[in-house]
Length: 261
Length: 312
Image 1: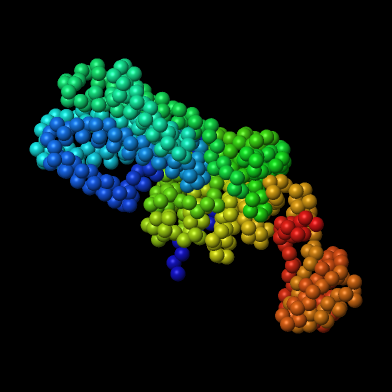
Image 2: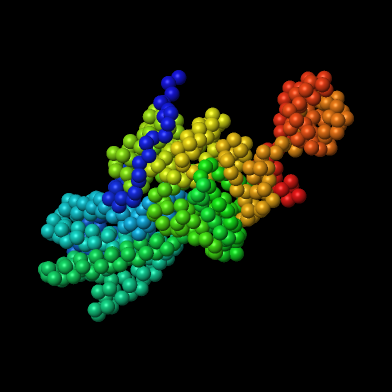
């Protein structure tokens, strides 16, 4: 029987020190490999098929105005942030299970750096998923004769990218705070997005989806560069704050702290 | 020798539940076994050493530094958990390369060291195309051990690494651990397979109910291990005759005979008189009984961890 060669002596010792660049590469690899799993893609394809059917039905039953309203109010302002939040929180929660806690967080990688690296890796993968979804709704709309979608595509893409980034960061934060992150997400959505966001005052600017809707709403006409930059800046500040809070909480949180021994 | 781990009055509670209760110990370089029944506090001890949880009170140092959230300590240790959870969908080389990079190795170094580590634990390239989740329990144990070897740790902590391994697999793992120890790596290992631990470890820490009972640890001390076994089992053709012979010489204080199986269990009155004077071969020959096997009835660890004998 052919047995694999066995080293007779331990390999030459190397001095290993923490290296954040390499560590990011490692976190990216582990995240991206899982992103490529056939089982995950099957779920994505099912989701895209449902979205295709939904868009097709809406584009047929209503006119251009109806479809665009659905696209802005439901797809961009509700579906994308909700799914990005759940995906972000789920990804972070997975990293708090023994598979990561035992193998990754016992290595010389500062925990805040891990949170940031994981966020970047996860968000890039999530953006690819949502880009496919946006392509689906735009293509279906175009095929059903909805006008003006090609011109609005850059704005829609910008709004989606911003919301996916911010919702993912908020999902990371909620997942680190509690395993019942859905409750936190619903509370935030109820108070800020559905509550403050609907009040016709400056307070509504606290709502992320409100900001993005303003950016995309055809009724608001041509959106100025200043408004666009303001929206981008606000959402990026929100993202950075949520991520910083997540990293700080993860730094002080005990892991695997249960009574089993 | 300098201590690599030092615990001074360390306690850890989970609310009202006890994890570790006021334990103090020192672990020196070499292979140290952590022994105790389920719930004794082994995993709590490991989590404290890994810096994943903080002591409720007391002070714990690893390489002279507190391990809580300390990358400098993490750079020098590796952990092989008891849990079989491995990342879904990853092949062993992908997983180990990613972990190696997180440890600070470049992609090419991590890949090279991952290959070496897998071969070292006898998981050859023919197994590398399978996903780790599809591995058998024994193969998972080997990959889990391999991920400990990537970054040349100075301390390896292994929680039940022999679980699911056949005897040859256990010997392979033991061989890797002996090689590591010979190379100056300290090893902390827990296992329920006590005979393997006895064969492997130079020192032991016995835990029970979150404490390190002094009597148990004295029973497992190097000095105690040097003593002769207090009981033995003979397999022979005439167990009653052998029992009479040993009683006549005042060597035993009690015995049990299982004539059908040719088994005689004896409890020595003074084991040194039987083993220590170097003439037990002559004694057995003199008895005229054909002896097929002599075995110490209980290993020192079994005795020390047995709830009946340990509490007496």
